[in-house]
Image 1 (spheres, rainbow, N blue to C red):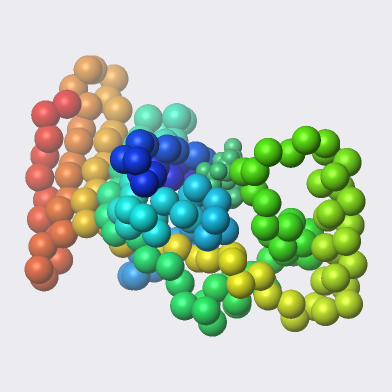
Image 2: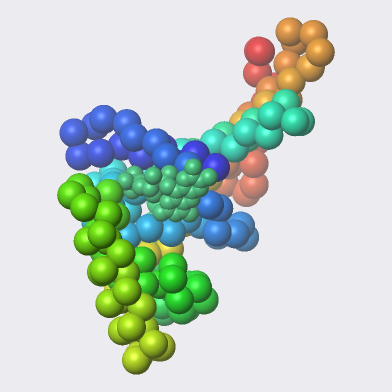
Length: 166
Ligand SMILES: Cc1cc2nc3c(=O)[nH]c(=O)nc-3n(C[C@H](O)[C@H](O)[C@H](O)COP(=O)(O)O)c2cc1C
């Protein structure tokens, strides 16, 4: 999926991420609090998710508020990841400038050694964020230029559904 956020200056940013699941509370994604994907929701707590299935000619767009997970949820999510993913996260340097790739490899090796010594170590900066949609759009391509667009808007007791011009 593509996660779009807005930074402190009001400028947009977007990146592809793995969707970590989905339940009634929303659509989760993971990141470090200091990386742009984690830092932006702290200064502007709304975001958009975009999904595209070229084979099906289908797009889903979601917009809504983003909230960080609890310390317990974040820790459980972190500990459920592979040792390499945890070691990488513990480097806590994502999106910073890297002068020399060898520096990364050395740091990762140290981080892996730390995890081997202390397997229950938790990276407190790693956060599971959840976007709770208040608007959703389903777009379905047709063979003709008349594509189907359905828009759902969160109402007090469910969702309101609208068709949109294509
Ligand atoms: C297919 C694909 C999947 C990706 N999955 C993740 C992911 O799950 N987590 C992640 O941190 N970055 C992932 N990335 C890299 C992000 O797009 C992005 O470059 C990185 O998270 C840094 O984003 P930020 O600087 O905006 O925080 C993925 C990229 C691609 C192309």
